[in-house]
Image 1 (tube, rainbow, N blue to C red):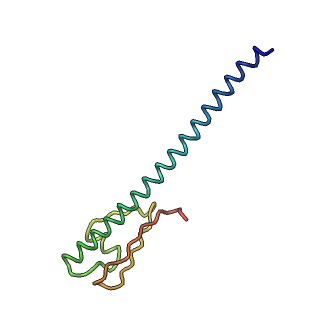
Image 2: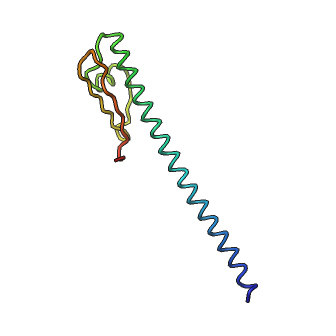
Image 3: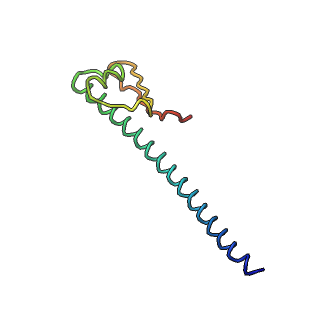
Length: 105
């Protein structure tokens, strides 16, 4: 009877090991995806900031809103994935630029 149970233990051990590997792979994949999204958000923020500073250097004022940057400086924002907060206080003060990932609380 002990000989019959031993193969089941091996199968159970193999199945549990495979399940644990799959769970770890999914967790690792989610972490990498989250890290990539955070990096993409920072790249968008840096691009908007560079465009605003470029506008100030060439035109003498910071853009009044994000749409001005999109229209005149060719910045593309994936509005389905990110929200760009662009708060311009005056045309001679650097605006506050924040990029938030949609669906994150």
